[in-house]
Length: 451
Image 1 (cartoon, rainbow, N blue to C red):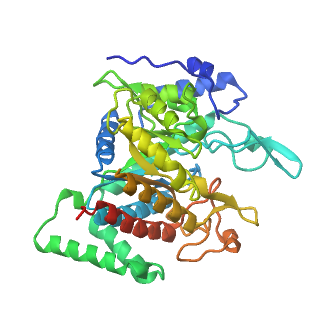
Image 2 (image 1 turned 60 degrees about the vertical axis):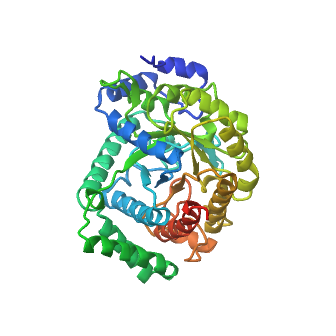
Image 3 (image 1 turned 30 degrees about the vertical axis):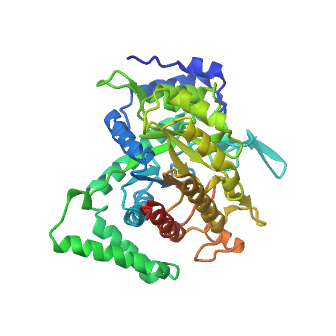
């Protein structure tokens, strides 16, 4: 059945939240036309493969690990940075897979996460007011008049940078870098060398014995040497997402070929708005961020709008409640959505509800708040008998100092040492791996059969 795609003008007329104010409409048209003629970044069949994996998450047969930068930068799209992010995600996935004894679906916040919603259109510093930084897809981070002017040419730069990132990722995950035994060796090194890692020696040892056993009996499946890895980003800038939506030659249906998985943010999930309208037409698996003000009726209405056929794997709800609200807001939401028969994967974003400003002015998050929200997420699902389907985290493979706490006991005064994020604070490599080991314990309890 053919699906008619709304035009960009149709979308604008619906009300498009969080969009750039481009100064030159003719230049926007030129860039959009160029993007429409560019090759796809991903393929429809790959999106279908991910949807099938997310259907397993929906059924409680798999777990989603989704992570990466808050906001990618064009300058940061280097082989070293991509490799570091991929490495920490693969390390986390090995630990989670062993703990749950279910497949871990690996999705990066990369190769497209270049645009960010903002709470205000303008930013004022020392009496000077300029347009807010909306990510490298729109304007520059430097606080100058020239840098902050929205430039549609950046959308072409984002496309090229995303293509290069995806090429690197594909080379890494198929070329031996993702070999299971190598990834586990990295975790063994972490456990051996990190003060916080020593707490997880027993689990690392169990994994080591399991791999040794597999080697001893001659088991060497293809899955030991390569992994499936998918890309994702927030579908925010309508010109970019619309230009990269194509009709699949196999099915004659539209797919957004800018990424395998797209999500709608908390600020753009208006039921009658442009983002929900566009995402309702594409065939990709999609997600929606749900904050603490979300009612069960809101969630059910979004599910009916975005997944009218109630297809497992099509829709993921990514909850971002905050550590102090997760146990009070989430139960009714999950209970009523489940009672309505909605097929959805539940995923926890423990980052965005726990951001605060340190006395130094840096935006930060407490590792302990992140863990408290994850624990609350697992507790609620365990009490309701539903499946805690995954984690959505902002992280980096580098040793930055952006989130306080954790086994390294980072303090607020440590933030200035290596604060590199252009937007929100990310977990560093040690904090990310600590998160994985702690979540592994929670997951192993949920995955244990009832006695």
